[in-house]
Length: 195
Image 1: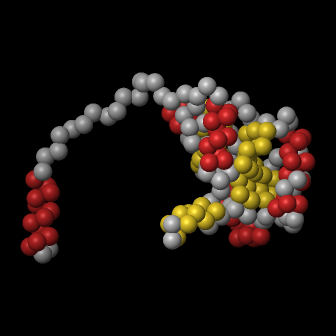
Image 2: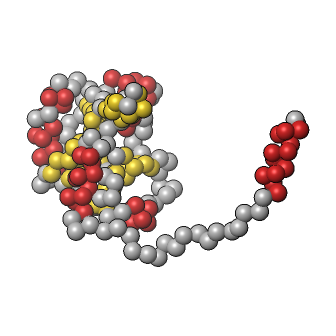
Image 3: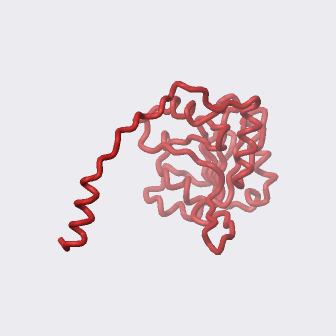
C-alpha cells in the first residue's frame, strides 16, 4: 500500500463518529383527502395515464380506443376480460417476448404519494415481460390505494413471490442533453385501469 493511501485510510479509521438513533416510525405520515385523485395526479405527472372503469369487462373496450393497442399484433394478458394473442406458457425463452406490443397484468395496490403500483411475478412465467413490452397496462382495484409508502411497506408480503416491485409511469430518462425521453429503456407507455 502506498504511503499516501495508508495515511488517508489511517486517518479515516481514527475518526470516531457518534452513534445516531434510528428515526422513529410512530409518527403522522402524509395522508390525502382523496387518495385516488392524488394517485391519478402522480401517475399522470410521471407520464402515465389512469383510466377509471366500472368493471374489468370495460377494459377491453377502453384498450380498443387506444391507437397503439388497435395496431398491436402481440398482446400478453393475465386479465380474463382482455384476450391475449401470446401464450406465455408456451414460451421457454423470455427473449422471445421482445416483440410483445402490450402486456396487461394485475397490480396489487397503488400508492397515492408517488403514483406507484406494486406488482409481483406471482403466476407469471417470465417477469421480463414487465420491462420488454412496448406498452404496459396494470389493473388495480380503486379501493386498493394507500396514502403513503409507509402504509405500502406495511402491506408487502415478502417471500410469497420471487419478484416484487413498484412501477411508476413508463420508462424514462432525462440525462441525455437535459431532454426527457419516454420509453428509453422499457415500456413507452403505462396505463393504469382503476376498477
